[in-house]
Length: 137
Image (cartoon, rainbow, N blue to C red; front, side, top):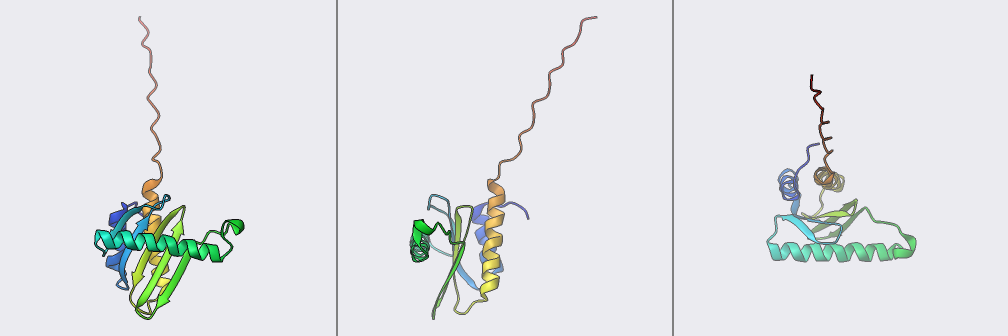
């Protein structure tokens, strides 16, 4: 899978998954990295709310004592759903149409996270060329 920047990954996500209305990507520090389908203020609000939802869900699972890290979550309402997927500290969340195909949305979110993760891996450094000494003849 090719590596892509966060904004590009989210744009691709909302283009291929017609069930997703908007999506946000949040980094390890909880900061909004990119969004698609939302105005900046709305994206900030969604990012804050999904962090709160994630925290509340983990607290319900036992919180820090259990040390269970939630990796995916779906919350449904009659008006649509919220999906969260977390991997290596990053979190991608989407708001969907009502009654989406949950497995497909989760698959698309995971694919998006993996594409972004590939850009974060350090590239191997090239070894410096060895200097050769010329002998005077």
